[in-house]
Image (cartoon, rainbow, N blue to C red):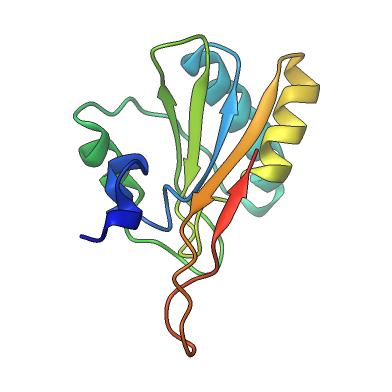
Length: 136
């Protein structure tokens, strides 16, 4: 592990999933139910249903429920309580969580604060590695 990974969530072992994440200032169960209702309404005409279920374990065990990561349609979303009034949000995109539009919609619809947080070291060298980011 390189020194640049220290201080990152889970020392960047779950990158890119944990390189970008969303946060909503609300109860985790309420956030998950509201998200499922919103998404369920979008796909109901196609005969698709959206379900919620609790997951337990360490942060890495909970993140593993997002596997496999996908490059197409995202099918797994995760809402995790924090030690504060905020709920963390992740999805199973192979390029990382796309939190911007989800947090914007959810925060506006539910009347709470939302944000996207992104952090990754810049490791790109001759077409290998990744672009760095620090975003709030």
